[in-house]
Image 1: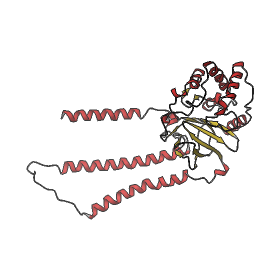
Image 2 (image 1 turned 120 degrees about the horizontal axis):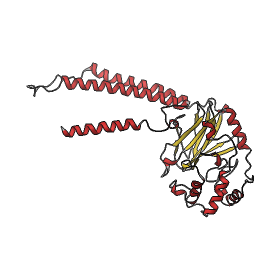
Image 3 (image 1 turned 60 degrees about the vertical axis):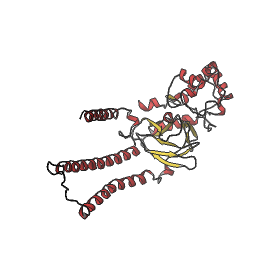
Length: 349
């Protein structure tokens, strides 16, 4: 008896802990407070499935309880064998038809939602962004606007934005829980999905496919702004001059170092990066490498030892590590790359 009581207490504490932890997290990193069309559809499917499972659980527990009470072994009936129901056609029909009905209840809205979210009927009339998954960062190419960005995806609020996704290396999965579902990015073929944000704000995205040692650190952001602000951001990005001279002497020296070394992997402006992220609006970002707190000190440390922050990244061992003094000057240059007043901070104000 004592052993059973201990197990019951452990189960109760585990259930209580699970309930408490389920309330942890961020509002913009959960599918349970949808802020976009895809997330809303997903939540509706979750609710339908949950209701079906609760119904099945209650029915099973009621039947289980009835059987325990009614057919329990009674004193003096140790050898009693209850009437067998083998071959009862009515029961067999019931427990065959009911699961079919429950599956139909789940399958019909699921299939409907799948076709709805996969529709590309208005793709040609909407904003299209080419998305590339890399170990361990994301690149965004606004083809028609001739804009290249990395890590931060800017979109107009209340509009469908189609994402044409592919991977440059291994399998990744694009997921912004609060506004959309998931979509895999494959090296061989391009997948397409659309996202639509209901409200302005910054929404956190994750890679949902195990892709290496820093899979959990492959974060990015979707910044939803008004159409007017988005147009302003596009114009500002299009007018970026990669050769523009920075204001401070330290940043000017950093620009020279960057153009003589870092430019081999990174890019500023509309040109696609060769290997690493595009840094056109690096100074407007709120995180370094998607997961590192934004500061000059952390940026310098990233350049000196990126493996410390993202194990297995492709930068480690493939570049000439700058001296601390050179890294500080490069940091001064990167931090002044602020082409637009439309930033993640302005989207949340």
